[in-house]
Length: 251
Image (tube, rainbow, N blue to C red; front, side, top):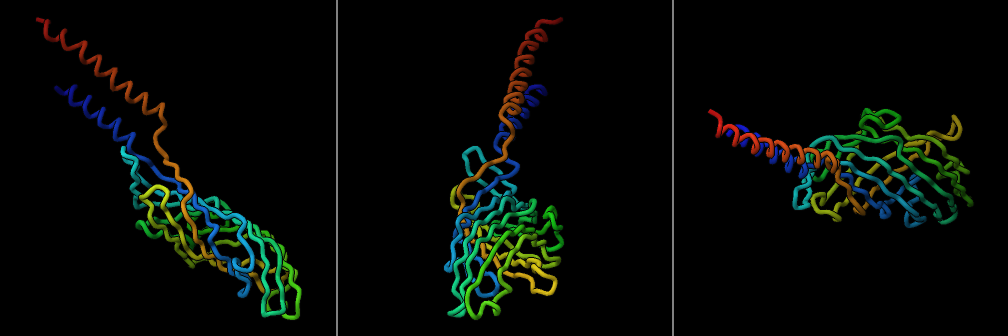
């Protein structure tokens, strides 16, 4: 009877292991996001986001029916990239043009509190291995017109990293996480980049994230590991059945 109980427990464990996932990675298309640069240049409408995306990795359980249940725990934001063109008329006279490329440095982590909020920022390192979000920005902006000096020191050539501001936590909001294909993301990321000369002002801006899910991947146990576990359970069951007649005929 004890062997039977053990075998039943092993079978239940094998199937429950197959139903659980350590995490779910959700890929977002952030093409509807908005970048506000230099306090007066907004993209879009005065420019376009050619491509922009990111991946959120969240603790989750995938049931046998394919549903998703996101769990409380540590979350990650990674692979955030953006390719942006600038074409902005400012103050009716100044005209700014150029290109901006943004990529995330490392992986940013934060505590996932519920199905609406992931917190990032505050106390992270420049490589973004802590809580903060660090962005590498490469940009070249030009300006033509009388009032260019009021919005920046042109041409603006930026090649630098925006480290997470200490103590300035910000949140990235997530919604509809438990419905495959329906997850949404939004949030606000302020940034400040070093000036091109020591006496110039830093380049500041705000990135307003808006995006929708394009795919998701579950981190589940490897198939061969699960197959070996089930095979082991079946083997134990067969061994137990072979031994039972021997116990019944012994004297």
